[in-house]
Amino acid sequence: MAIHENLLGGPPPTHLPDDPGPRELLAGGTSAADVAAKYPTSSLAWARLADEAFERGSVVESYAYARTGYHRGLDALRRNGWKGHGPVPWEHEPNRGFLRALHALARAAQAIGEKEEYERCSQFLKDSSPEAAEVLG
Image (cartoon, rainbow, N blue to C red):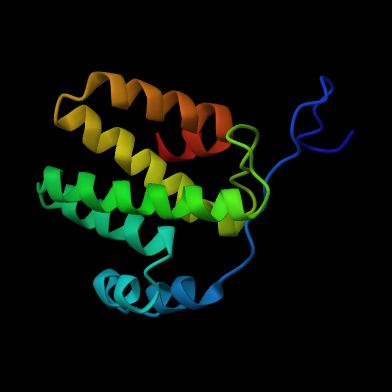
């Protein structure tokens, strides 16, 4: 049986196309701000900015970065056939920017007291990729 096979006939997993530029720049030490400026549609760059802001205690800034990455990811998912639900597998590396941004948005929402958004984003992450929810905490 294939991984992510849905026996109930639900939507197939969405696999975003690979965009190695942002990932390679970040891995090479380029600042997340510079990567986001060069690749503004990269959820990964915005998620990294959200993580950095959160780590230094700038929770509202983290929230804003995460929300940007989340919306950029939703746009990419929709362009690639996603209909608002269904698996977005963590094991497909190009999906990780969106999943990281979604996690960062949930985390920042919780930190600023946005309970409903925290719960919605946390559930969305679990529904999209149980593995991402586990890995990201």
